[in-house]
Length: 363
Image (cartoon, rainbow, N blue to C red; front, side, top):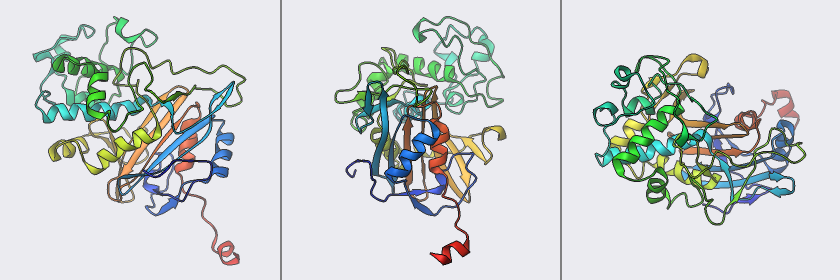
C-alpha cells in the first residue's frame, strides 16, 4: 500500500459504480478522489468531524487519506492509526470467517440450527427448526433487527419473535447474526475475537471486535455535530464481548486490506467465493432504487451493466461504507464519526456536476 496522505492526496481512481443508492449515476468512468481542500469543505458542509478513506485499484490497496477531527475537545486530528466503529461493516468480515469454516466443513450453510443447537431466546421452536446459517447471512430469517438493544448483549434474555416465517421475506437482522455467532463459537470452541485474530489478524492488525484497542491505535469519538462543544460518545459499542453484527472497530487501511482479499478472492475456495458473492435474496425496492440482492454477508447491486459488492455501516454517530467493483477491481472504504456521515459519503461518491459544452469550450 502506498504511503497514507494527510491533507493533499495524490491522484487516485475510484469507480463511479461505487455510488450509494441515492446517487443516480451509473457511469463506470474513473475519477480522482477529492483533494484536501474539497474534503475539508465537505466535512464542514455536512457537519461531520472526521473521515478516513482508503481505496483499491485493481483489487490492491492503493491510496489512503484522513481529514478532520477524531475528537473535538480537546481537538485531536484523525490519523491513519485512528479507529472508528465499523458498525455493520462487521457483518461481511464475520461472513468471510463463516465461509472459511464452511470450506473446512465445520459449518453447513443449509443444515438447520435446531438439529444440533438450541437458542433459548427464540420460543417459537417450530419456526426455529427451519432456520439455517444461509438464511442468517442473506437476511431471510424473519427475525427483527434488535430486541432489548439497550442491554449488554450477554445479559439479554428478552424473547425474540418472528416478523415473518423463515425464508419467506427479507428482514435485516442483527439478532440473527448474533445467533449464528453463538453457533459458530460453540462449533469451534473459540470466541469470535479469537477466530478473527487467528484468521484475519495478519491483514487487520489494527482492528478488533473487543476491548482492548489494538496496540498503536487511537480511539475516535462519535458526534451528532462537528460544532458540538465537547461531549460526543466514546466507542461504546466496543466492549469485552464481541458482536458479529456490529462491534468491529477498524482503520480504513485495515478494512481496505480485507476488501482486497475479497476482491482478489483469496483465503477461501473458489466455491466459497462463488456462493458468497452470488445474488441469493432480492432486496425490497425501498432498500435501493437499483436492482440489488443479498449475497452471503454482502449486498450485490447492479449499476449500468456492472456489479458492485458493498455494505453500509451505521452505529448512530458512526457511519461507514465499503465496496468494490469486481469487473475493474476499484474499491473504497470510508469511515466517519458523525451522524451525517452517510450523507457525506454519498456526496463524495457521486460524480462531479457535468460541465456544459459551452463552458468547457471556453476553458
